[in-house]
Image 1: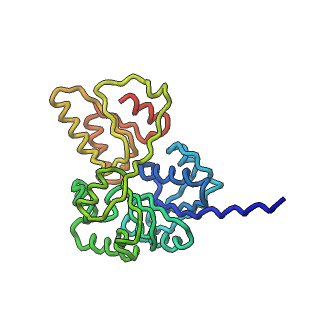
Image 2 (image 1 turned 60 degrees about the horizontal axis):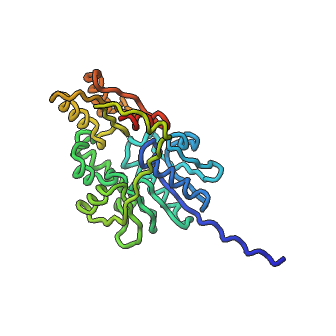
Image 3 (image 1 turned 45 degrees about the vertical axis):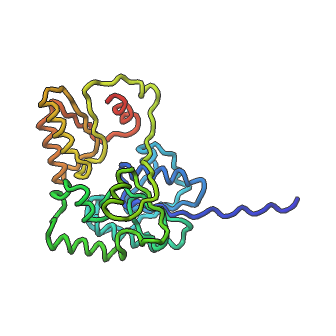
Length: 298
């Protein structure tokens, strides 16, 4: 028999997310890993602890842990979550990923700009990567920014830039593919920053079973689903619905998401839940069938 031609080596792909929680950007990261695991040698980098079994359960993916190389990025000694010392931690994470990038055929950041030192795929999820842009686009976060407007905050942000060793975005004309998670994000980027966005890649949404989707709708019921944080404007949504009730409409709302009682914002939201507990229900974090059932009935 003639010798069989050798199979070409699979491409090596680096996929990054600074801190894996349970939101939309994390779903995108998980589904990206799953989509590429059979086509390439995938290395996934994050600073958080991660168990693929949990990721599969939350995001309804089928990632094979044996086929993925998982690398834990260094983190600052005091950091225990993705909301602590974000600028400094992101700087450290960026520098670490840049040191790895030259060993891969392609690099993908699934959460905002990450300068790999070479062209990569950048998925924009929000404006947290730039302090000034974040305040411009979403002024409601300003009261929740620690030491806002002080020399201490300016020094903190400067420290993050120093750790990153870059300008925060990606160099113009290098060839990075920039994608946004919504048309609004893409349009806003063009309006306030001038950085061109090449396309829109919506976060994955997994459909429910037919019997779940056929569940009867409960009238006058709203659902607020997602991370409970200032940029999600949860307080504003609750106050709008309170005004709707004040005008005579018997609406009720379920708030589904993890609530951090250690933050000022988390305590504000919890105080409103307790104050309006006759029409506001907090279910905590939901995933899988429980989330699909709630979505179908609201």
